[in-house]
Length: 388
Image (cartoon, rainbow, N blue to C red; front, top):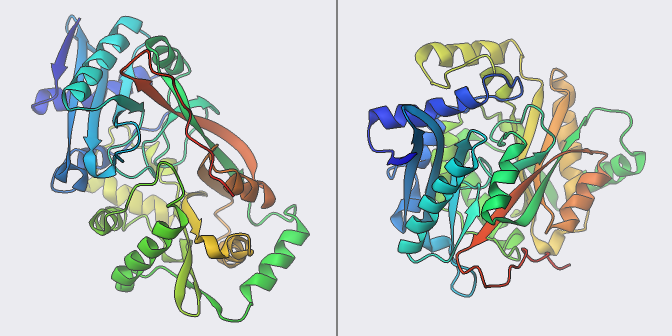
């Protein structure tokens, strides 16, 4: 076996084509858009490169590529008082422990040389909305941006020495269902009409305002998370630009109290329901037209919630249910959408898990973020639970 760095068109093509060979008999797998992966590794589009770096490798056995991995870090998102953890991601490998070890060793050595003390994976070099976590339960077609893996991947990670840093749970919800708790909807309606509160959707015409309001909410709502990372507004602008044909403005909601932003909710249609008809993952003109055509034909019937947050002062006040009340009105006007995926919430966030249960959602799957400490004598610690 030999390890090869991804440096040219040939190795880049092999990097993208490998998953189609691994999953060729798995009907649940949906190939990701190549352009989205390449944006991650483009210094012009990923601000993580300002204080970070990334590298990709393939492992070959003879003439055949049988595995791939990427390693990366962003020093602006590593806190001094915590483990200096880099990341690994985009891992794909046939059921071959020797190949997996070679890939993990290569990523470990590269991160060590960059001064890191641990590696988390499989994660993304950027926002955790996409490409985050190892699928360990719920082997079904994933929502757009959620990772799909064969069951043996966990064995490859654990044999190497990775341990579970935290678990990520996803839930499914039929928001139009009459089975949702009556008490929930009564509270939701009451909250949605409270004085001094108002709800507003995202607008492409006002995206600068929307981005600024999101950052205001995000910094207050998530700063107690041990894995809190600042958001770069330029990253959000790029994400909005790249996802423009997917975003529906009335799937993104803001809540204001006396004109101050206090809560945010973002949901997108599940593009995987269309991408499963595109085998190569290339965003060619033909495929773009096909996506737009199938979207117009209402072939997407699921949505995925990417993020939801309320600033601490208003947590527990029912604002979340007020958002769902607004969303319910939207969904009733778009009856072809019959399922919402709430993904994902970490096991370190019991309050959000309780909220997902309260709206009548049902557990669907689990991903895990794993960590490997380079000092093997050092005691391992799970991510801490967010305190009330």
